[in-house]
Length: 170
Image 1 (cartoon, rainbow, N blue to C red):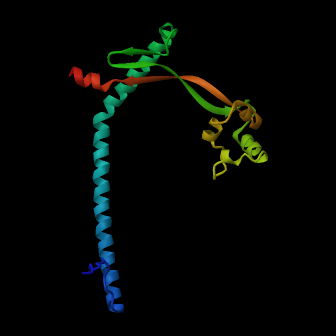
Image 2 (cartoon, one colour):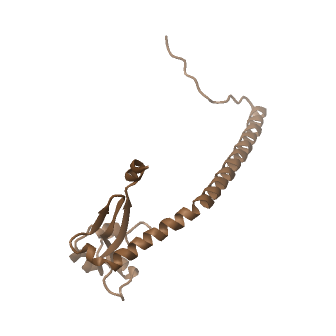
Image 3 (cartoon, rainbow, N blue to C red):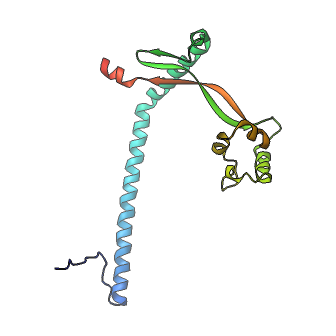
């Protein structure tokens, strides 16, 4: 026995049916719009309430991180033989961060873009005609120099909290 094919298509027989369908569609879209507006209003109210509740914690978290960074900066001797300090409730220290920057203070991203076009190195150009720094990051230093860019490494401070340890201690 062949299976019966079912569809969720409304049957429209004439212009009166079409007019009724359009009226019903307008009603449904209006109800959906009101429901979405109530939903967004509720979500906004919840976000505002949570932001108020968590504001103190966010500020304290930021202050603690700045305090750890200040402590690490004042006690650089802790990092002579290592990049980070591991403690029972987390780690903190320094990491290397690499970014692509213009090679000189007189070189601009616009100049690098022009050089990329001149050398037909279009894979490093975004569709919006911006330099694609991710692609440049994969290039060797010699190629970066060719277009007027260079690799710059700097230390950035990090903190990683061991949430499991806190949960275990509680």
